[in-house]
Image 1 (cartoon, rainbow, N blue to C red):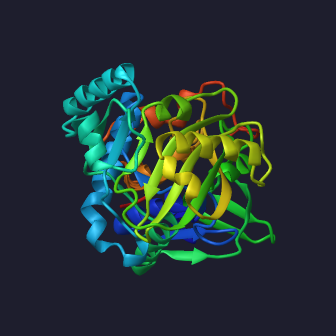
Image 2 (tube, one colour):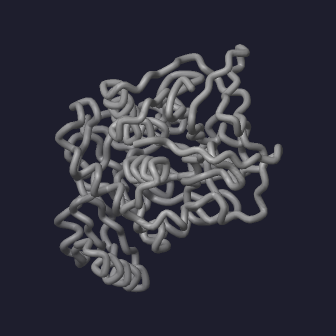
Length: 385
């Protein structure tokens, strides 16, 4: 065996798995077909936020946020960690009631928040349109620059003995612990973790995963125009919709003074090009909340494809019917927030250690209709931690 753990994919999830595994003393090798963190990771917004659509999402995002908070002082300056907090904006009394429900739920999990009145919200964010009903403030949430944070994790893993093999495109994975590269080379490991985002489906046909396209736009520098991450309370409904195209208001103030504007979601469009009509819808939605946006200068726009599962929860665990193959993918829009939590959970499972959160909601075996294209033969093997 060339390694205890071979991780396919050097995005933020693969890098987090590599770092957590290396910290346990495992021999780790990471395979990357292109540039580390240049795929889905580079296309994300970089929000570190707790979402509460269901208990499993809340548990993983809460754990992920707490881990980023505990390591924020280790991050390089270029990671642009900024504890700006999140304002969940309520347009009317119905959405304000939703904010109150959200506050009560978060309180049950020990997460503090503050309800703001319309006047309080205006004092907090004067650039917002007047007439909003209020907001829920989660003051300890943050944003960061994902590519740098991801590469920092990978460097941390390398400092603890992990190795990175570049230009290494995996074309086949086998239950005997072998990975065949596109150049014909074969590598072997005791355990293989597939953390290749949407490309994971190429290695395991039939994976319950599909790409979800998103578009973002970043402005020139406008320091102090926006102070918090701003998100409409309808964002969660948009994020968890399975049908059609959708947009929702989400703006982040970056450490550079720029504004990062989202968000849009599409399932059917697999082209990497910007969808100008949908982008216009997205910006029009943003301008409903921030009227000054129409006068700002855009710097660039881009698209990305997030790997999404049918129930919006990631695939973290052993491939059904296998002993050597594992999955760490399917995080959709929460991969940055939950990266450290996902890495720890996967490393715990690899080492047969009890995770700090219940792993069952993320177990790939929950999709009982999924069977790999090639039947997997059970081989009893375990990593030594």
